Length: 243
Image (cartoon, rainbow, N blue to C red):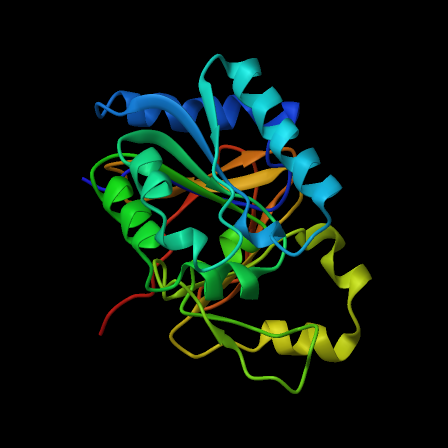
């Protein structure tokens, strides 16, 4: 049975998200997984050494806060995504968390690698998988290049091919030009586009066909389903009707 899956707008490792992250670990432990919290910082792989240390320590503090073991995997390049020690660490872990940064780098680093195969296999056998910001965007079939508007979308990890995520939604359109916003809002006819606000997530629990909103703000359904805004505790079926 597939494990729980969380798409997070922002806030990985912050105290405001601790209860959600603990619940994802609890879901997987109930499926027989070990209570380990795997940090996958790949999306930040091009940031400074100081920032990488910051993210590592922030994740470690969160794991201590919720009383589980933290395992930080320095998967920054494709070579790292072939290392056996990283594959072994992922197997049977309760929560695999892909944190924020550059979604294109994240996808290019993990696509068609043993590490990504290990992540999917562990999730399919009951582990929880969470993606924050870039980590949420990359789970779709394609990722728009909103920073380089003339570039084509890059291939995503394709775990949720129909779902496209705009993270930081309540802040996002203050950061990017109108032309980039139009690009983000244009998706294929068979896709569902959602915006997830900061410190907010939408979660599909193991064995449940509905997604549920968690957090301080909202999830916005923008394309592919009737436009709506969802608040903490509200649920939705994120799939398009079939003919």
